[in-house]
Each structure stands twice: as structure tokens, then as C-alpha cells.
Image (tube, rainbow, N blue to C red; front, side, top):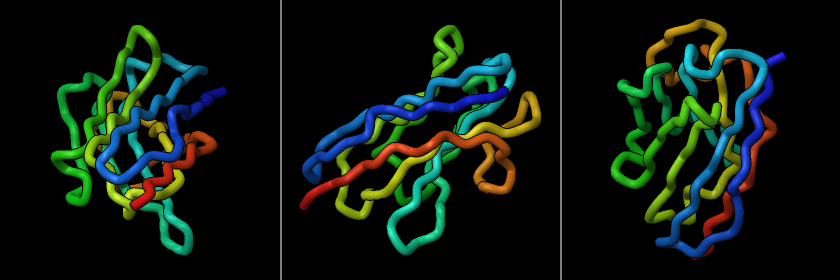
Length: 126
């Protein structure tokens, strides 16, 4: 079955950087888009970034544009989220997600994803 495993979260000071990884298994990684979402305490899960199966099309939430970069390495079956200039409001559990359909464009709606990782905590101190 499809499995997604996030890593790379942690505690960082405001202005710092973290890189999250999402290791995928159970299907041909290069045929599917990937997405990153986050959920802060007491808030709904929100879209962060998404990348198409080819990596040529990318979408970001306005709140992270210019600070976060999504990428993928199909040879390693891994997606990444590079987070720079972190702010306290970026504190959340971050999830990677995979859609059911192949060759999908970047998808910003959580309902479009069928597979989710367990999440990794990112805490940004002020």
C-alpha cells in the first residue's frame, strides 16, 4: 500500500530554516503529484504547497510564497519542503499528501488527496 513518511521537523527560532522530507513507497512516485499541508492547534488543515508529477508545475499558498520551496527527487522517491524565514505563525504539524490520480497538476484542496503521512511538528519560537 502507499506509505508517506515525513521527517525533518523540529524547533527553530524565528528567521531560521528547516527542510522537511516526505519519503514515499508503494507506487511509482514519479507518476503522481505531491502536496504539503499544515495544521495548527485549534485550526483547520491548510494548504501549503503542491508540485506536479513532473515537477514542472508548482503552487504555493500566499502565506508562504517567497519563503518556502517545494521540490521532488523522483530517483529517491522523496518530496521536500524547504522552509526559510520561518515565523511563529508557521508553527504547525506538517503533512505530506499524495493524490489517487496519476499525472495530476498541483492540487491545493485537501479533499483531492487520498494518502497522508503521519505528520511532523514544526515549532517556531519568537
